[in-house]
Image 1 (cartoon, protein in one colour):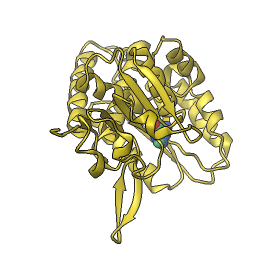
Image 2: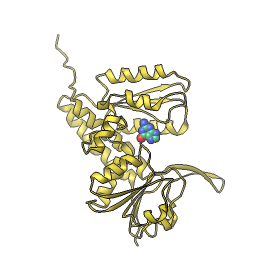
Image 3: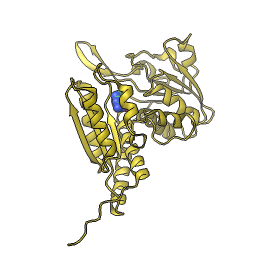
Length: 295
Ligand code: GUN
């Protein structure tokens, strides 16, 4: 089978360019430049890289962006105050608090505190409920990126058997909801599933989001399947640090129809979808630029 490695970087760049055009058009019509606020707590190196990439992409799309960096030892009250202020600011359309938070801070509290209209992560229970009931408005960025890829690679998803490996709130659960909404037959496989391998082997579309390096090899994949690898795992191989996904790329590549690489697959699409969500939130809020009165 001729292998199709899906270039997530190129696809994301195209999406960001399209959105930059849209931002230009909207600002020319007098709307406020869409604003994204990112809050980072602590010094986790992976989180710092993610935040830097998010801000860089927001700037490429012409968004106004604000980063707040708090010390790892900050209090829950200090973090709550930052989010409350961002909720009230007119120039901010989207708020993202980078997860995970240090153990003494409550992620649940922060997810619930961000106003649903600015929840560009799609993690607030109101947005989760809207997705589950088919009224999606702001939905989690990683599964949204996966869906954008599937629309291009597969087209109509109706009747396809999609298997999602992993049941996290960030990827697995919303991914399953979105695929169901797109008329797939959906199976969710997790750590307590009996015979996960044979269930995955039936998938037309296989989404791996478990966080276990190279867990899925060719025994898990049906010939001709489309495989989306959401995992980003740092491992040591031959004395070198390396990023790998949840799929054993070399073993699976020969049998699948298309596959996303790690890095350069789902990661850039997740960031492009964050920008997309910020635009959705900005359009919904519809804030105009302040009128400057002539003296
Ligand atoms: N950490 C890892 N992925 C994500 C994400 O999609 N959103 C936030 N806020 N934190 C993350």
